[in-house]
Length: 591
Image 1 (cartoon, rainbow, N blue to C red):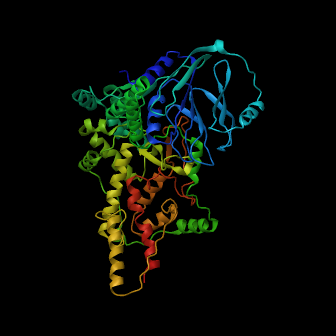
Image 2 (image 1 turned 90 degrees about the horizontal axis):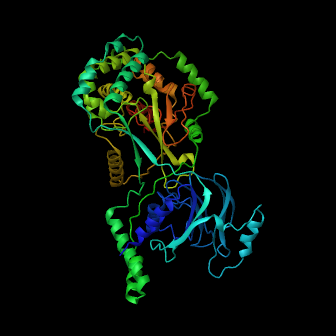
Image 3 (image 1 turned 90 degrees about the vertical axis):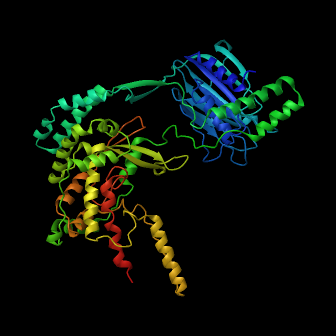
C-alpha cells in the first residue's frame, strides 16, 4: 500500500515542477503547538517549493516555536481561550506585507491578510478560520473593504489544483493550487568546506619545507611577521586542502530518524485503510494510533535572526557601559601617577617559550573552529613539526615586545540564542571564534600568570573560580560544611548571596592594570593586556550583513568590554586576571 506520508511528499514534489509559478497550500493542523504535528510540518514543508502555506487551527500561544527554515511566518493567536489561530508561511524568496488581521477573539472569525509581490503582479492572500457556531463573518469582509482591491475572476490563472490526505495533522486533507504568476526560482542551498579526504601529507610536508620561512624572521614588527606567516599557511591550505561546494538536497529536522519515519508510515497506512474500507475495526486502529502520537520533542532551530546585526552590535558595545565622570577622573589620575610598589625581587616577567611547550599546547587543542585568519587546527597538526620553530619565534617576539598581533585580535562572533524563542538582543549569547594562534598565545600567557600567582600565594585560599582542582562543587561543599558546623555549635547562621549583574563585564580596565602592577607584574604584562584589548574587532556569523566594530576608543573609559570579543570571554588570560578582582572584596567582609 502506498504510504500516505509519501503521497503528500510526492504531491509536494509534483508541485515543485512548476518552478516559476505561485504555489499555495493549506492544512488544518489542529495544533502545531503539538510537537509531533510541528515535527511533521517542518519535515514536509521546510524543503518544499510551496510559496505560501496557510494553516488554520495552529493552537499557537505566546512563546510557541513556530519558525521553520526558509519561511517567514505571519500569525494570529487566539487570545481568549485555547485553540484556534491562523498562520501564513511565506517563502523567504518572496516579499510579503501584512495588511490586516483579526483581534484573536474566539467568538469571531480568525483571519490574516497579506500582500505578496510576485515578479509582475501583486497578489492578495488571506487565511480564514471560522470556528463552529461563530458568526460575524462581516468582520472579515469589513477588513477587506478598507483595502483597495480589484477583484476579478482569475480561473484562467489556475494551472493545477487538488487535495491529498494529511493524517499527520488532522482528518482534513491538504488542499493546494498552482497559479500562473511568475515567482523567483528556489535557489539550492550550497555549503562550502575544506576537503581533507584526499590530502597527501607527504607532499604537504615537502612543500612546507620549501617555504622561505626566513622571511618571517626578517620582518621588523610583529604584525608583519604574523601576516607573512599566515600568507604562507594559506598558500599551503589552498593547494592541499581545496574548497568544495556541495548542494544540500534536504534540510531535515535532526530528530527525524529512520525509525520515526517507519512509525509515520505505519500510522499513515492505517489512515488510508480506514478511509478505503470504512470498517469500524480499521477506523478504531487508526484512531488508537493517532491518539498514541509519535515523534520526539526536540528544540527547533532558529531559522532567522529577529534582530539586525547593527542592533546586536550596539547592544554588545553598551551592555556593560558604566558612566561615572567622577570615578573616571579619579581613575585617570591614579593611572597616570601610579608607578607600582611591588617587591622588586618578585617581579613577573614573561619567560622564553620553547618550541616543545608550543607543540604540547597545539596537540592538546580539540576544536577545529576556523577564525578570521582562515587557519584550521586539523590542517596545522599535519605539518606542525615544520612550523613549530617559526611559531616559537613569533610568540616570543610578541611577548618580549608586549604586542598582541592585530590579525589575532579579530574574531568571528556567533550569536547563540539563550532561550527557545529569542526576540531581542539580550536573548543572544555572543560566542567568539578566535584565531588558532591567538588561542595559543593566550594559553601561554595564562599559564605563566597562573604559575606566578600560585607560587606567591596571591589568591585567596577560599577562591574557587579559575583554580585547578576547584569548582562550584568545592565551593558549595565549603559553604554547606560551614553552615552545618555553625548549626552544631548553636550559632545564629545566615547566608547572604550577592549576585552582581555582568560583574566581570564592568571591571574597570585602568584599575585592573594598576592592580597588576601592585601585584608585582612588570610593565610588559599590563602593556601586553592593554594591546590585547585595544583594537579588538569582531564579525558576525550567520547574518547576511557582516559588520565589525573597534573597541579602541572605548577601552579605558569605564565602558567595560563587549562580551565574546575580549579575553575575558572564552580566552585564557581572562580566567587568570579576573581571579584578583573578587579578592579585593574579601577585606570588606572579614570579621
